[in-house]
Image (cartoon, rainbow, N blue to C red; front, side, top):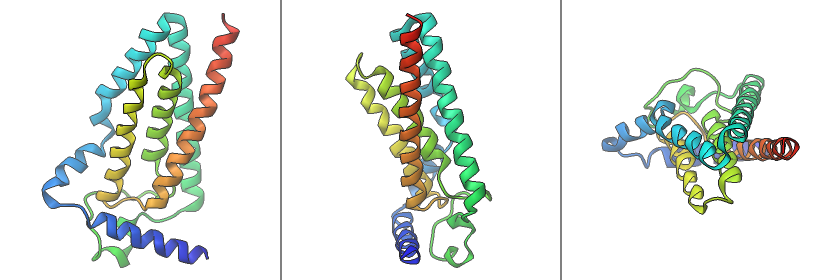
Length: 185
C-alpha cells in the first residue's frame, strides 16, 4: 500500500510539475525565495504591534518566532530521519520533470510548507478578531508551496504534510500565547 501511495505521489508530482510554462519560470523562482516575502513579514510585525501594542505585541512576536523555530526544528529533524530524496535528485525522474532548482538536502516534509503555514496560521489566529482581511494571508503559503512543485524540489505529499504540521504547530503556539497574555493582565 505504501508503495502505491508513493507511486501516486510521484505521478501527481510529474503531472503538476509539467504544468509549468517556461515563460513563468522566473516568477516561480522568485516566489520560492524567502527574501521575496520580506515585505509581508514586515506587515505581519506591524499588524501585531498595531493590534496588541508594545508589551503584548512583543510577547505575540516572540511566541510567533518560538513557534516558527520549533516548527523548523521538527521539520529538519524529520527530514534527517526520513532521508527522502528530492525529486530533482532522483535520476529516474530527471528526463520527466522540469528542474529549476537543485537543493541537495532531503525532501520530506517541506520546510517551506511547514514554516509558511505556521506563520500564516499563527497570524490568522491572533489577528482574526480584529480584521477578517487577515485570511487573505493564506495566499502566501499557497503560492509559496506551489512554487516548490514547479521548481521541481517537492512531492505533493511533502507539501501536504508540511502544511498540516505548520497548522498544528501554529495552533499550539497560539494556545500558549493566549495563556501567556491572560497571565500578564
